[in-house]
Image (cartoon, rainbow, N blue to C red; front, side, top):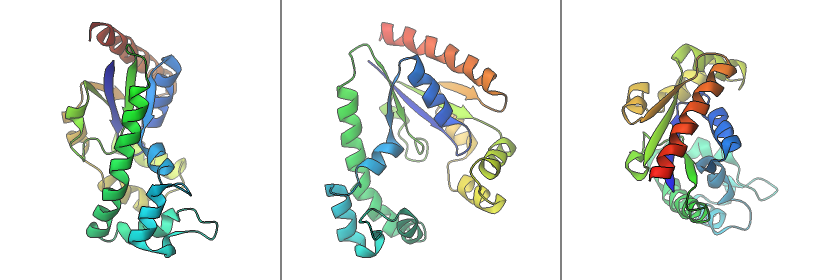
Length: 200
């Protein structure tokens, strides 16, 4: 089994690369999706979040009110740390379960947005970074995600620098061009990952 960390700054196109790798046969372990699953209604994760932050972080339907919780934790590092202390161990445990269920010769790609920020590169055999220029990312966030330029800048500034991400990369996939160029690069990286997996 080859364990690959996949990361990239917001707006770089990591989700598209993840989708392409899945289509080639990679087993994708998506941290963001798991982070949502572990706090769904009825889970111990949601119960722990409510115990820590109170009923005010729930919607009228009993689901987690993400914008409200976000407003609390992103303004206060201590509250963010408290949330992370609940969610991160649950995400790690679920990720380990999904990895353990994969075939012995699988290429398991862990899609981890904050890989560089949290110093997680040593956990993986290889790290793939999806990279795009600041202007490209800004354009995508404003045009495709409906953010204001100020919101987009703030989200980008809250993440690791481009240099910090590139410093942990074994493979860099540049995504400033058309989708066809991205597909060619991902295919090439996939062939290399399959080869490494066979040798691993």
